[in-house]
Length: 114
Length: 115
Image 1 (tube, each protein chain N blue to C red):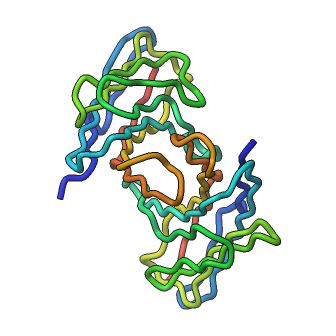
Image 2 (image 1 turned 60 degrees about the vertical axis):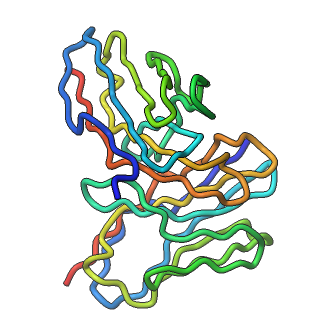
């Protein structure tokens, strides 16, 4: 079946540090890949996505590149801020496949210290 | 911009009690979903709906029922709450099915504790 494996947290960084959160996947069809962010006390928000191999999704300084050869979609940011403290979820949907299924990783808690 | 709204936000139940979580979306989306979030497990799909009057089981449907009588509303019911149902529940909606990168929109969550 489809699955997403995320780097386990928690991750603690100092402000302006470089961030990488690893995400690898297995998929039975052609995946679209997503990163969602969940700030404290809030629901999940789409951070970025990529729908085909070698696409790069980017938003708010975060980037992730869809690597088909390594089945990966690692999240990166060059200089994190305290306001980036949140839980980050990698997720995938598959085409063809069940139109209702979005498979999530277990989430990575990021804390950025001033 | 309301988006997806869930009520209530917090609730404490005793074992065996029943309750209903309400989800409302104002984006005219066809698809709606209920997920639960547990520590270290990401989100798991409970039930979903592909349109008004339809419902279907997701990954973890046992102990829950749902109804979609109106396109904008999706109700999640717990008939006899159990401590294992202590979780954070998220409603979500999407314009169409979750393929080709279509975006899903989440509510802010409902924290449920069963004692």
